[in-house]
Image 1 (cartoon, one colour):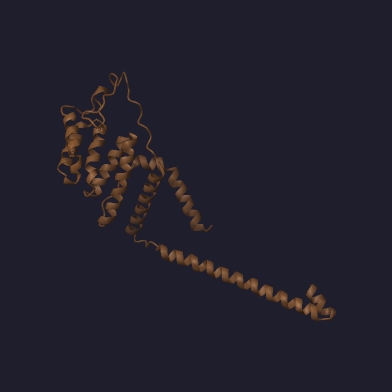
Image 2 (cartoon, rainbow, N blue to C red):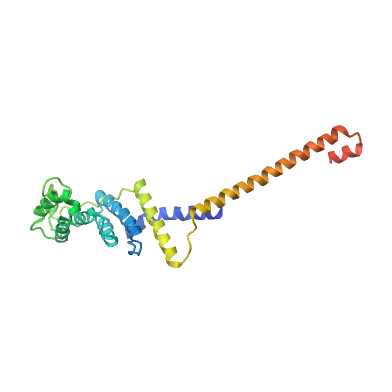
Length: 246
């Protein structure tokens, strides 16, 4: 294992150990001149936000969707998902605002009927109601969702939100974002990024050269041993035998 490989493994293990804290910060990169790269990053943040929203961590989902809209306006469902995140946090006035903006987007026309039903259910609701019976499910099939039984928040506090689902796809998403961010930092500092093909060729020819050297040494040893064996068989000189024994 080379020094560079060991360093890379240590960096990767450190990042995985620090992953919960990294996810909690949910740092959003600033838009760059490369719109295609920004779009790819936004797609991964959108996927991340949906996982958070399904897992019940609406605050992180909100930050992820907000980051998507900061990077690009070309992901159709991002605005609607942001509205759902505000809805889940019981910030109904902001949720209504984004639901109405989603109605203006022809790209999500198939969702318009559900959005109108949800807006009707949210009509008159104020932000962060004191009774949990006002809480509704933004993913419910019927307007208004199912009420949650219980009294006030003091009498019947809400349970802690479940932890996000850190599956293999999420880890790959975070790892890819990390690589893109490091690449952007290198480009900003003027540090050239080595081409993967050059590195692969360098390792290939290094290995091939080492194999050729070892093969040559082995071949020379075999020829030399055979030559000495022939001299032993054909020479009756004791001095030669002594030299060969030595």
